[in-house]
Length: 283
Length: 333
Image 1 (tube, rainbow over the protein chains, first blue to last red):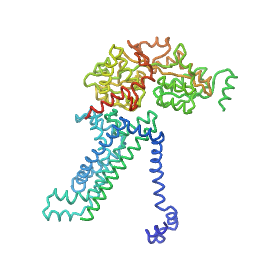
Image 2 (cartoon, one colour):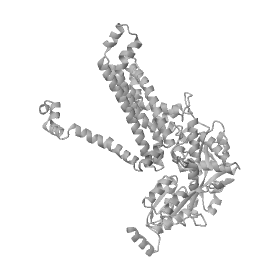
Image 3 (cartoon, each protein chain N blue to C red):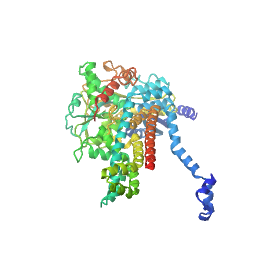
Image 4 (cartoon, rainbow over the protein chains, first blue to last red):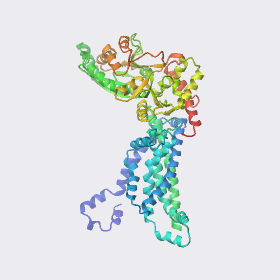
């Protein structure tokens, strides 16, 4: 391990103090990363998993096949997937605007894109209910509907879609596009055949992050969704309800399914991403 | 261990009680208890007693006491939670035998909160089904308060002379008219308070005591007590394993005394003491048809939990089936 560290930095003694070098050798990066990840991510997940099965396999099965739970899981999955598709398209459009257009208001747009991250999610929910609720200044009232859920999720996950694509778009080689154009490709064909394949891995990264965030989202949806069982109740809200009624094993069981669903979808996105990167390399 | 010592010296001294009393109660009376404990400590019996309170969802609190949370005095939102402690041997089987208050420290009723001035003129349960009325009631699978609301709606139909089938049809329309079912009554009240500012057709179904507390706290809402509604009774008891029984009994005695009952009434709870209730009759008008969870063959919470709210797959409850059917038929919105 110390060999690797030395190999990574060919002249450590010359460039750093003796003290720094010793610390670097005694706390190697891999150990730090593993410890940090374990404490922050793996341990809590393991705890949830063990809690999910604490009532036995039949109790676990009975909770995750409960009609209200299934309806909530389906709603979370479907709305998250819709949001991912919508935001992937919108994300490229906004990134395009920011990178390719010399628009005077681009700085403001750039700041606005990050706003959903800056706002606490429950404030985001409150904001949406004010704008799209019964007292809407623009005359749109869809508070407490599934549409409100999609809008809330789209709002909180927008930065992922834009910020994942933006640097890739900025680094894209203009010559390839010019070559495509000089060979007679239309603007749309150039976008579809040249630009989009290069953007695809970044779009999938943004989509994966957005999906993972959306499927577990609580703060922004709890206010605007109405939480009607079987109708507008999200899985995250269902979990909270189970905790409120002192049913921790069931709450953990639903959390486990949510976690597992996110894992499957992220894996699919990961495979798709690799396919595009390989395809890109072959071209 | 030290508890036995305290008890022994307390009995020997035979003077005013002292020491700590652990109060474990349901969530909504938390602000009321702040006032009541302070007033208790101003009385001779309470001046040396320290009350340490724990508040939470009624069912959770009851289960926690069974699991070993120290408690000298317990106060729940419904008798089922008290019976759990009786089964565990932590509360005497005679907790409800007092001829004066039958083990209950406060009463309330299910009422309707509406935007200030009641713009939609909501008066009856049937008014809730008028076109455009948006009903707010919590999720009955996580909230005990929601179950009181639903049983009030159902029992009101029977009180009006409708058949059980008609009462079920009413429940279906009632549930279809709900726009928000948050996990708890507290969440539901907050969502209602945000929404009703801009929407004049909102109606929140809630305990009268909760609504009065919200109004005391400055919420600009009105409320209506329907002619047919359910009586909510909140049980209280000293535990059998109390480490400080004399102080615990003194505290409960104060809560049930005319002074304590008067304070409860001021804070929005219906007094259980007849003499005090008479004094507050204008604030708490008696509904025409006031029924209990025992009335009309409802047969108490154990039966109601099974028949109406069971989530068992082989024999789901009436409300469980109704909510499920609404989910499938409502394909949009």
